[in-house]
View 1: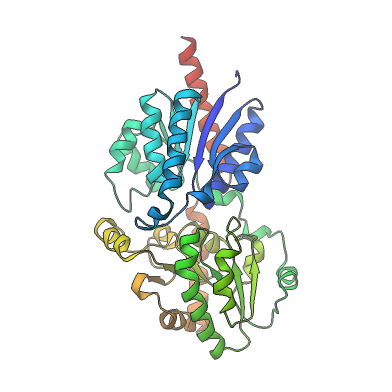
View 2: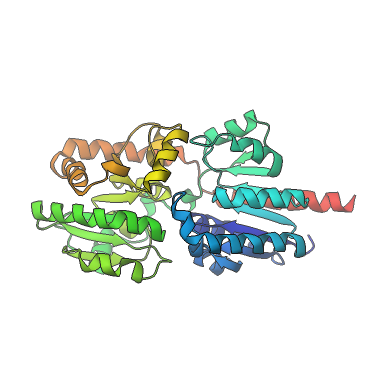
Length: 389
């Protein structure tokens, strides 16, 4: 295959991880391939030439986006220019739908094939987007089996590959033993560990971490031996956390390693809704899912969202496997009350862990990233064959 050029865009931490694994497989099979676009540190390490860093664009909520609108629009104009001037052979879009669906439209108008990996959650809200996807996207690569059926119903070319998290998480083959993780974090295996995971975006951390810390203080008064592990966003500045942590008043250990085998020492975690809840589920860590955005964003979402839960782990399980505290429900008192049963009722704790153990089977077999790369290569090959005709 002659040298090809791919424009790839991932605007969030989870998309950065999935994009990096995809690019690694692509470059392994197509050494001359050039890949550039928007992503994070993982995609950069994988060989992507970054035009913009994902951390500059990632926000949660419709109101929250205004704080970064100038940067987002500048990045979008840059991508539009690239579509016209650089003429990539293929565009690969990863989640991040408000930005990426607009890119898809401009790419389609220029006759550039578009592969969309990690579908927008049209099954949860804004289902009308499927019509735009049918018009502008050449091929969808989806990670849940029910998504495949939905796109086929609307005549969108689609391939189900399974969830890429399965390439990274294997609870039965942990790279680090629990005793090693306790030692590395300076924590004791004799007392419970509560994990605080307020998300990977600045707006999420500012909305969620203060109430998490206040709830943790209430728990610390009840359980003085309790220990606390804070997962900081790998791409976020210390300044995001500094003022909040200065008021923490609890024995807190911080890590920037992300959610991985070492996190499995947590007996319970407070987790921002999203992919992180699936990561916790694969490690079989009981959790409480938290979510908070601006009041306007939440009210608008209430009108559009079609599902009764927001945590990805609950959506995949099709039931409320773990508690959720959303918007006004998210207070330190409610966090405290939601945590107590996990520490005082062994049967409840055991049942939650059993339910979480079932999530692994719902995410498909390992190898999703390699299968997704195979679809991308096939689309590139088809384009080349059409050009030769």
